[in-house]
Length: 345
Image (cartoon, rainbow, N blue to C red; front, side, top):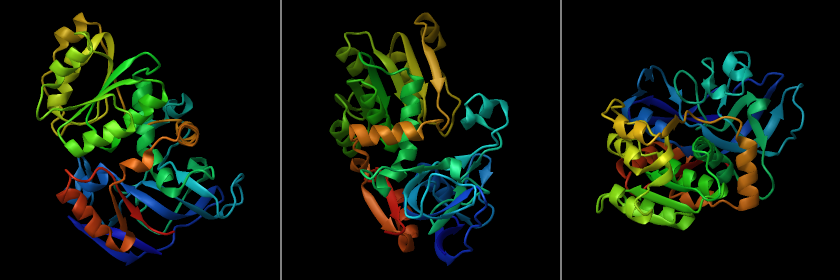
């Protein structure tokens, strides 16, 4: 098969690669579409994220969907030609986290495209049937691929206990921030305020459900939100920007008794935080690490509620031009909200 292989910093080459093996419990999927995640760009640009270092050629990409080609003898419920989305990680199934349903915390997870595991910028992937989800005819491969970041948004909204009647602030309107807005709307939240410094992303947030957008480069986010909420703040504050400045703001934006949800990770993740106000206002803080048990939920949400997932796609590239696509995403971050790699039709 053909694969876009990262062979060095800012270097991805189209190469012939071995077909993946298919075990008795596995499904072979011909990849149609794969999203470009911020983690892919970080590996591409810097060759590492924290302690995870790219030390040998590796295939990037983990937000993928495609067609079933064949499957092992123990697999049931799938047929050749089915359009499926792939949850990009599988776990041991035996540890305390897996057994309690919090499998996203499993320490033995095999996840696509942090090293040393290959990802899905390639023509075929093989994975356990338990992480393969058949898509309804109303959905296409782009929506199937974007279910992965949408799951993060839904997990964030759930961590904030989003429901009808609550208000929310989303800090950052990149892909995850926008997916969080969609998740909040799906869960009945209508009073959604989104802050960012990029006007293009803010316009997109308005398009998909934000009640008010705030350009933090031009006005004070805290002052504007307090003015909009009668000085109370929001029930839920979700930080997706991954910046120390917005991390500090969360405690100022939250209503007394409210909930802060931390999703983004700042490059320097240790910074001052006002725990005095946090304690006096009896706030709750929760965090998000990937997601769990959400693919069936997000598939139904997209199908029934027609969530505008494809609206956030700003750029498309084919597999042969993956390197140019990644370069474009790195060099034009202010213009790119979500890029996808079209691998097959």
